[in-house]
Image 1 (spheres, rainbow, N blue to C red):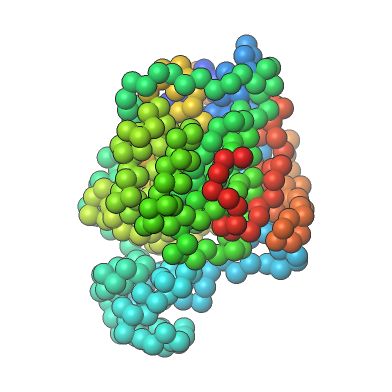
Image 2: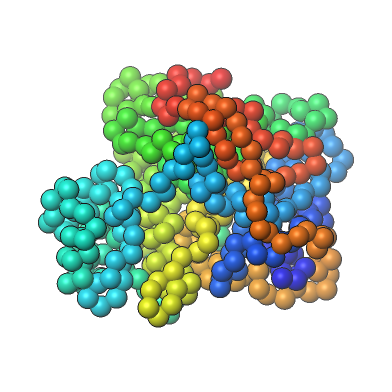
Length: 477
């Protein structure tokens, strides 16, 4: 790994957020051999996402604190690698969570492989229903059925029933797919200025940039890693984050424990008039809304980006999806593991005998930090230009960046090469202990990963541990 890779990766992410290239000089990196090892440049992508996010935080802090210079940012591969597998490091009273259910796995089919996702009860039920199997069917029964079918047939059948299954594709097969063309035509971070609302300047931080998002109110309508990682990061930086879930869908309490740091959590049924009124009252004082549901699901409640900005001019709306919200797969459900399978990543990381996987759910975590950084940059821009800002990110677009190696493999010019400083004194990444902490909470004693987002004077840990899912009142702190 050369210093030019450091420059290019962070530069790509920072440029995608609309950042000033001159600020890249404020970033330094600590490279550690052995972190996030893979055939694809996962470590470099992870470093780039975190570095750009941290720079966005430092920039907003400097603006609000009235500083003449943006605080220095330091990106340590050890911290990044540990945080990118935070769900694996989590212990709750010494117990390790189960991250994948038995029916969430690769299956051999008559002509290849398919991967399913059935962590949630409703996804498991839809998978088994699509395969015409009883509710108590186990791994062996499912394996026998899938072994007799083609991978594409399983994909079509399961998705048609509202479940989740994706056929394994090579990178070449994905390159010829219509959805890939639709995704590749979009920028890594889609940014759209909407409206001409008066610039909304956040209160001054009186010379202290340590919590750049202090006082920012964030409505968090996300589930499953990427969105929750983004809002967990905003909470670290001082934002008042209220996660809002529907009581109609269950949540994995262990997943909430991992990504619930710094936030409060409530439940509202937007199908009920009273809860819609409550949500509207929250929206009236919100600065940011982050959504991570399947594209179109929230539109029927008047929560499209355009509708939200009509109701709350000057809002920052960040929308996250698996496949991009456009193209033939635009309305499909998806998760990191399934995007890896569709885009050729699993084939690249595997062998001729069996598909593989990235060393982390890097599409989820990486997109989460990109999203958080994009929100922070939008807040900086909003105070200067006014108007509302809509942001759109997709796991499949982040996957495209990883596969292409755009900016994490390319050579930089001599001038760009000097934009970042790099510290090679770091030892190899072998044990994550330096980036883990223990915290008492209402759900038990937690061992957890610290945030890798670091800048001079910034926070080192969350001030609030996760509480029980959905038990906080639906109001701002």
